[in-house]
Length: 229
Ligand code: SAH
Image 1 (cartoon, rainbow, N blue to C red):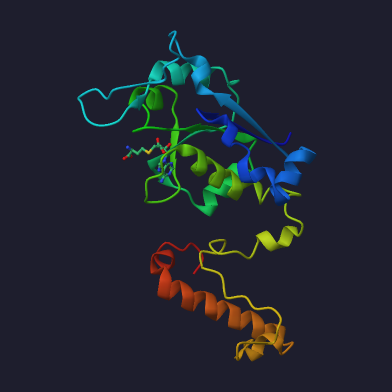
Image 2 (cartoon, rainbow, N blue to C red):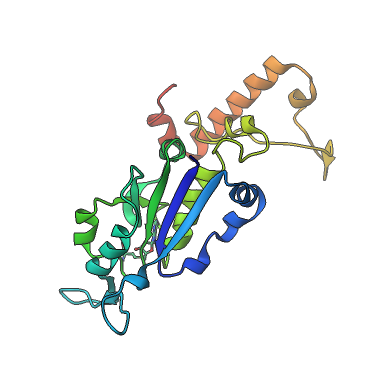
């Protein structure tokens, strides 16, 4: 069974978005993964098809109603797939969580809008809140596309060269080393000599050292939480 993403959203036309192109798009056409969208508004309860209301306690903006969203969630078959809610309050997405998701059957992903979602539906449907970073988007749709991009690219058969997924930033707790390609000289800048030496041991060592140097400079937090130092 291939990875199946079910996305609950007020803007189904935003999907599959960029994931309909390039390698992910071809894999989608082949059926290596699947995407279904659910229009949350189809589960509205009133004539006006309203999905949001003013926040209890006052304040700006609108909040997604729990009853409408619960009906939308309950329309999706209750299988083993995790139910995620894209949310800036969630646990920040990591490559480790991406790998876990990619090894499963798929995910049900709720995209918030407005000020967010009524807390009671998060609790009642046990939604796992996932953040893609410490900044605020206007809706969960691009966040869901980013999460799915990260997952889909490591599904078996999606990337042309399966090995190229293995040596990436974060896979070993480090940022990746710099890359170079032809031409040998670019605006008087040369490719580091070691990379054209043919000495694979020296090349590996240089790459490891560069990865460590960049991580120390830019993301010392990664070194602290690294599993295999
Ligand atoms: N008032 C909320 C922000 C709402 S933004 C707060 O301050 O926490 C509207 C919707 O965009 C959210 O419900 C969520 O689905 C999505 N969103 C915004 N920023 C996000 C982020 N960093 N990661 C994941 N989803 C995000």
